[in-house]
Image (cartoon, rainbow, N blue to C red; front, side, top):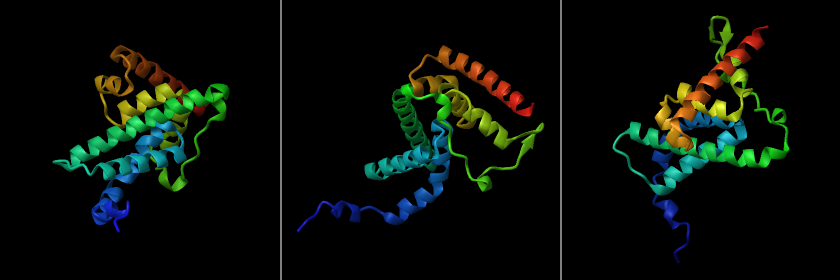
Amino acid sequence: MITDFNFKDSRDRKSEEVIYDECHKRLYYTSLRIVNNSMDAEEIMHDTLLTYFRKGMVFQSVKERNSWLTRVCINLSIDRLRKHKSESLLLNSKELKAEEMDEELVESYSFKGITVEQVRKALNNLAAGYRLILSLHLFEGYDYEEIAQITQLKEVSIRSQYIRGKARLIDELKSQRN
């Protein structure tokens, strides 16, 4: 008797585990910077990898695979943000704070007296739109045109949001120092 679960036997579990080990942290942190919630980021990371494994996609290089995974992760994160935005219209945005990352995971790096922790807190205090644009540009390395395609906004809007978001991030960092 053939069951619905036979397709799972044809999948290469070893290669899936290797790909998971290679990519899960990068995808998690990519999503975390966008959605600002560790539970959502973990779920999005898993959804991204499951989508990849289900489709059985084959890429010519690891770089292409990682690029595809990152794009899917970003799109799922943006979708999650949109979902939360529509749900949270009734809630005060100050009540929606991200969970603190484990202290072990945060580097104690400091530049001009500003630590990674201070930047992370300041970034988390920004509006979701600014946080998204800054994360995609500064951390993921996307240019304005790519961000416009991902977010379906105009490139001019992306540039102005980046400039405003960067200014607010600087203001937030200054207020933390005082």
